Structure formats: C-alpha cells, structure tokens
Length: 315
Image 1 (cartoon, one colour):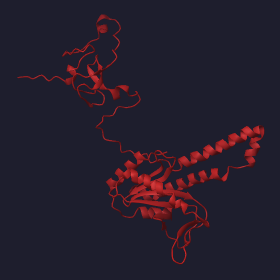
Image 2: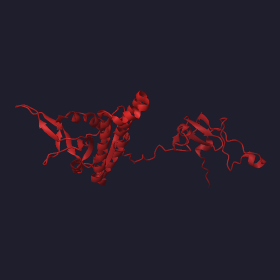
Image 3: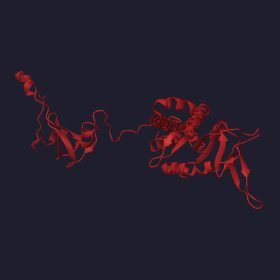
Image 4: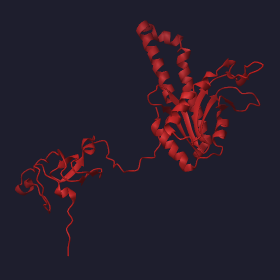
C-alpha cells in the first residue's frame, strides 16, 4: 500500500486564487516552440490560504499570513526575505547568533576628534590668511585642547597594547566602545575571571598620588597628578560603570573600575590604590589585578564579552 504526501506549498493558491496538484517537470513554452522563454512572473503579495514555509529562511508561515507567492516555482517567500536587499544574506530566525567579537580599535575616536579639530583650524587659517597661510601654520601650533585629543589617543593605544600582551587569552579586551544615546565612549572594557573591568586610560605627566585633605576629625582623600587635584577623573567613571551595569543587569557579575595612567611618575614604593572604589594604577599592575582569580568561568567570560560588544559597539 502506497501513500502520497503532498507538500503544503502544493496546495497554495496560484495568482488567480486556484489550487492545483500538478506533478512532473514544468517546461517553459518557449523551449518547445523555439521562441524566447516567457518572462518569469513577478511574485504576488497575498494572504496565504494555507500554512507554508518560506523558501529562503525556512521560517513557518501560518495561514492568512502576508507572504509572496511565486507562481512559476509554486513557492512562497516571507515579506522580510522578499524585501531584503540582494547584498544582505538571508538568515533563519532560529540560527545561532554570531559569537564573533568586534574588539574595537584603541584610540580611534580620540584620534578622529584630534584630526577633525586640526583640519578645522587649518581651514580657518587658509580662509583668513590666503597665500600666507603656510607661513602661519609653520609658525603656530594646535591649541592645547586639540593636542590633548592626540595625547589621549596615544595613551589609549599604549594601554591596550600592554594589556593585550599581559592578559593574553585569559581575558577579553574591548576598546573604544560607544554608549548608545550618549556622546561619550568607554576607553576599554576587560572581561576576566575576576569580573568586568571598566578602564579609563589617562596619558598624564607628573607624579600620581593620593593625599588626605581632611581636617582633625575627618578624612578627605583626593587624587593628585602633578600637584593638581584630579579627583574629578574618578567621578567621570560613574556614568561608564552605570552603562555597563545596565547592559549586564546581573548583580552576580562583579564590575570594577580603574584609572590607568601612562607617562606619569610614581613613588619608588608606590602601590595601586582605590579612590572612591576606583582603582588608580599603571598598566602592568592593572593587568595583575585583572588576572586575579574570580567567580566567572571561561564560558561566562565569553558570553559576557559578546553581550557587551553587541550592546556597546566599537566606535
């Protein structure tokens, strides 16, 4: 006893609303007559009479769903696949999400800001001085506020390179991350067994130290760099920590923050210290702290890194 199985798409209506069960090979009439083959009919958007499956992404399409009916091949295509640009590959809904990481390029946004400001300055000089612009450019320099962006970019690149060398495969390092709906960025995020690290790189000259400016009955620890109070650098990390916390939404994942100085001076017996819960340190010591044991497994590290990379994309 034989049974016949009819595919759902065989019962789908043709362009006139009829259904058929034709079998065999369909030969264009032009091939028999020696004439040019008929033009392939355009797919028709319609409400499906029967349930079917998209011929591209294989997603199930229920009866009465809007889809495109291809009369020549007697197949259906969902609206998303039919309207997708040819360059954009189709992707089944149940496909595994990509685990590839865009780790970012350290210092990219800071370098871009420097180049933008430098170019604007030169354009203003050209417009104002004409033929003498070259002399003016040679005798003058970018303002300190502009050069600071180039210094920041250099610092971020140095921190990223040394951290990558020291952390190796024991951690995932993401650089220059954009925080959606803000104009700011996060210099570096490291994910290791010890937790998630929000790192702000600072390229400063001068001695880094912590000084108590309190009185007899209170303490007031402040961060000083080259004799200047730079405690505000610690406060600026608050919104970056909040952005990472919002993405993870998991109190079980430890989140740490660090100010990492390059080009600065430290006392002979200096040690990393914490200012309002933020580590203040240099690159090699920061790497040692990041590599300390912690509660996250290797799978946890990869999963968290992918989540952060998607939510906080590279700039």
